[in-house]
Length: 323
Image (cartoon, rainbow, N blue to C red; front, side):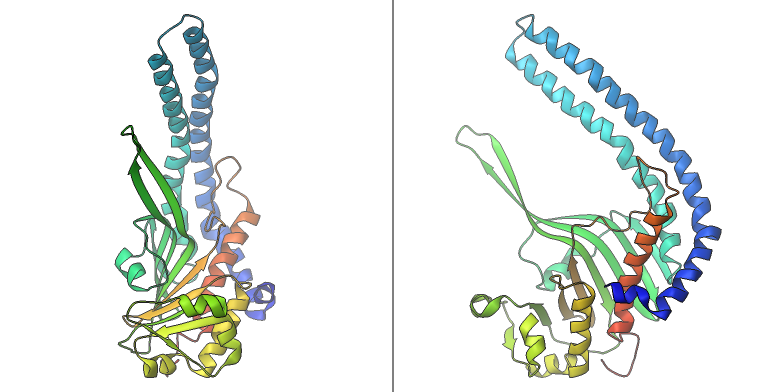
């Protein structure tokens, strides 16, 4: 990925971004930093209340032989205070991100931003990129045009929540993580009607047992591509129409760009959906405990955006003469 940040294109774009930062982003960040300090004071007051109040309350409970149920209530109360203490962090983020993130993305193109937005679950489920899930949590969502291509970018977590009851009637809940990372949806300039999925290779044994309902395995002539990916489709001819030799080479370069991470692709409804798993908290231009005027943090977000938008040119999605 480091090679991407040493190209002439990147250096020139970064110079323009630094000027844009000074003129457009910095005034917003300065204002947000004043807001941050107010929320930080609220957070510290709530934490101080918890530190002073609850040890004293527990001491009184245990030294006066008060019924156990009241001890339980006090512990529940402590959880409420902790949740209230986290409130300023959440509401600060909810307030300032819609101010700074659209301006950040608009350096690259024309974009809208939704706090805690998500790509439609119907699209994600239809892609066959994810195992079954029943809950999705959105963080940052961008939608707009870059270099003539419509793009939706969503930082999401997909979960499988399983609820059961114990023998004594108590409810229990387990959360199984299905996916955590970034989903990127591209409107394709090349028309197709079928469904083709490109998944990470699971090895000879894993591939032999892995099935997708309605899709069949597609064998391709590119041995290098077959080493890293497994292709499924409901239309063998269309899959080869989409996955030309040149396009497969670009997909391999994209895999290298993301340093071998388990990126996967789905072609459906004339769209390309790309999933990039990552545990990194993306698009965090604002801090809560530190000053917002941290250029190093801003530069990191710039690199995250640049990496995503480079996919358009790398895969040549902006060209209308076929893939």
